[in-house]
Amino acid sequence: MREFDVAVFAASCDTVEDNTKFAKQLELDYPILSDPERKVAPVHGVVDEKQKYPRRWTIFIGKDGVVKHIEKKVDTRGHGTQVLKQLAELKVDKVAKETEDK
Image (cartoon, rainbow, N blue to C red; front, side, top):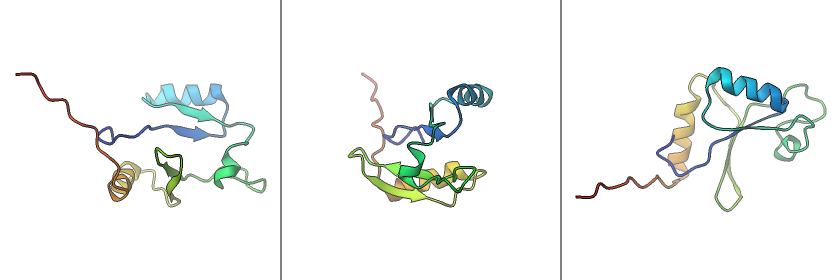
């Protein structure tokens, strides 16, 4: 995924402490944003007052701040491939490779 010019982060309704522990256990190299009071999640439709647990969605937001796509059928086993395919379909820029000085 690092080949694309994107910022990667997760969002969770768990506490900062729980998310920090989870990130360390999985050795994640991206931040997990915490929304334990569920103020942001409802804005994106990920959770409502009737749900105990948030939906597991991937939201693709453009550099302009506009939501470009919401993947509502997340397969945790193949999600990395799913995300790469969607980034390509959205025609997200790839990171320019550095050229070596000669």
